[in-house]
Image (tube, rainbow, N blue to C red; front, side):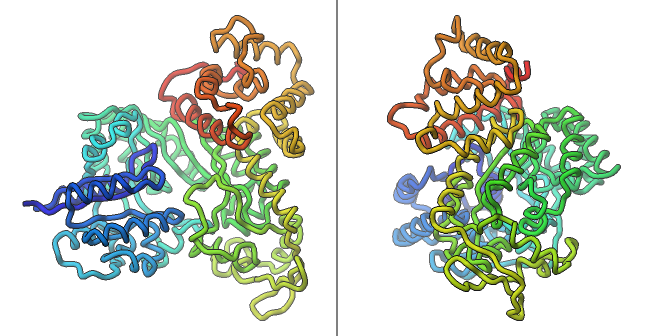
Length: 592
């Protein structure tokens, strides 16, 4: 009888791409069969039931930081059931020794070759790392095994693929620099175009496919590869795709050619990170060295070619404050992308960001108290004045932006408490360079609250005129006014100073019409309280109707709960009708 392995990952609305390829590897190994269990929230009972009923020989966990404690408990439970465990994924790659307490095998880095050796019985029960592992070829994925077990994933019109793995950039919040270092430097692992064509054909033959999302960090980085891909993809597959790139890849004539090749190949949209509208934060805290005018120029190049654009940013980073967060909103308002994606920093240990927050006393915890999600309230202690006090200290040192990360000031300086919330900033020798102040409890709580509130409303605010000023007005609302109705009043009052009343009335009438109502007087209360929120979304009437149908503003919900649910619903709606355009829809009322 064949041996059995269960592969375990988190359940998301998109397929677990790494698991699909690992399952494909298992399919290639004679004498093994595989099942996949996707864990919804933290309910591991379906996994335990599968272990009891199917009696696997091995259970393999893909673990992400922020989800690791719950996963470790499940690993321990499976081992107590007599089944050996292998742990792989990002957390195993960067915290292998911690994972070893909960597993029989730990795979650090690429998992294809290591898993094959484990299944073939040639891998001792140790931590495994192969410096050449990233050169392992991708096996054809086994999508059927996941799509049959989770038909809603298979039914999605969007399927994900990898064309390459690797990133040469040094963002402080990312583990890519550590990954490159452990492998002796950056190397882009490219998949042959022929392999992508075959994978896409296999999807077309068995499953719905209207769009492919290439999950590469820097799709199309290799120009020679991109030339071949552009020639073959549209001709042989003919399915539009969305991809992720860096703004640096849009620059100069080479960048223009790259974007033209994207469009010729069938690219309909691009996602890219801006992260902050404040230059100091981009350069010295996030290590994303791109002047504001070049950010706007690169985004314009993409949109001028008819592609949709999603920008990504992070609020509540070290040395940020409400003004820098509002500057990020203002930058996005000027760019006017199809969609803005905004998260709140999680300062993972083992990254350069983890070092910065530790150096300055902004965070003294460890990864165990971090969430895997990126919308949770900031856990940092933030400085008074944002970058006000640290920026002159750093710039006086004269370290060029082109210096390697290990020479960047914020990785070398540290804060030493003098008294209360006052800290001296000292260099490696202990010499004082200046002083910063931490916010007190009340001030820190206010900023953390403001960053959450801004994040929840970032998408519609970025689409409104004078967005920065509107954001400031909304954040200044008192607790009694911080309700859906109060937010709606502030938005309407703001718009009325710049837009004729007749136009605002027209928008509300069109919204009512899209909801199949005879007049604005019939608008359901939550929609009537804040109608202009919905007017900046494509098919705004459909979004408003869904909000009503699903009881988003039920009296039993707090304002925070309602805004959380509304934010999730708004993002998914915008993906469908705006970014990916899976279904044709009416333009936003505010633009019609």
